[in-house]
Length: 503
Ligand code: NAD
Image (cartoon, rainbow, N blue to C red; front, side, top):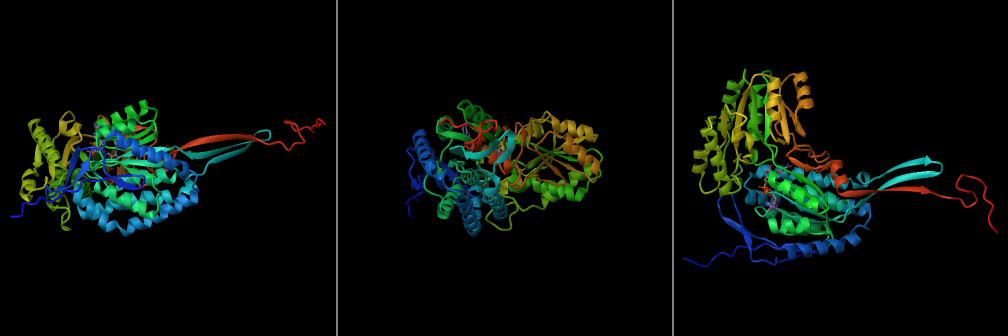
């Protein structure tokens, strides 16, 4: 037997355009969740690595901010074309490190590329405002400026899309960037940065530092960082918001979720059940807009529960690289065990487990699989309703009326997405008006806004003011200067009288 160990690559940081080793001997393993195989090692970079990246970005900013708007926009067009050429390769990489199916990874990328398309429209987006004659002979105009160095910190669940929600727009606005991708799924981010380099993004404008909390704290506390874009879990988002704000930075921190879906008796139950299953179990439930609680009107709850189980039974669970799989594994063994723990808690607290995906998951093999799992008769105070499980576990609660449904949803501390299923325009409209969530679906299971609009979570699902994407994104990555100007012809006084020149 050949005992020679296969060398697992230690990933490198990208600083000032060069891929260099981090100054640390600490690392985290990158694992293929479908097999448990170690595929790379992420260095847990030190504050020195972070400082080096920030310095490179600060130096690059001096020139980058002087580039013309059309140069930056053309670069985004080129980057977009290169991304499209590499979509298949990127999708395979996402599947390998994240576990989601190839089709899901391919679709994820489309949503990421959309943010680059949006950044291509920068000449219009960066336009300011003006108002003439605000006072006699006086005009005002507003001009947008970049901030300087911006940091982006991303989670594991959309490793290709989420870096693209941040750096293309930030850079197009004239900022330079330091990206800290998830230590669990760093490979897609590396490839995306390489492709940005290929498109011609100059050295130092886009830097990548691997790591976990030490690297993040280095960014949050560094005086050279002017703004922080974060996406991740609720406790970390809150920490990022408070810490970065304390250090005088702008922050947008997109956080965790527990999305409630209200089903009214007049809804098309077949379509609704199919949509709910796809929303809850797509990407193995690891989506911040995944359906996690069904709030069913009691008149249709029995039928709906049967249909949800029937559609769940049809899903093919398996390795994401197998093109026939419809649901892959969760990210880590610890995440699988956490989900098992919640299932046990749900049973112990009296919810009825109407579909148990644990055995089905175990049968698949070495990866971290859990089949679709469904509870009925859950109650608001149970942990399966209160906490974000981030796995394929869907819980159903029963209500007697529309109003009780709205009240039940309002008890959640999260407010990312909320959906209603009905054929009544009146219920749909009232739901949109009253529900306490920032992204609302009407007969839609995943109300994710296109990149041209803000991704607008509420309550504990978001910390900050300006959301990611859309015009909010442009506002976040720019600061405004308002100029008030008056010009003299030379032969008039400030009130328009002929001036007697002093000879
Ligand atoms: P996470 O919070 O564990 O990690 C996110 C990032 O924060 C990573 O880069 C990680 O290195 C860093 N981090 C983790 N712990 C830290 C700490 N103690 N101090 C400083 N930095 C730390 O999140 P995750 O598990 O990678 O991603 C899943 C979470 O992200 C879910 O809660 C999901 O709802 C959320 N999410 C939200 C949105 C949204 O738009 N609201 C989108 C995608 C994911």
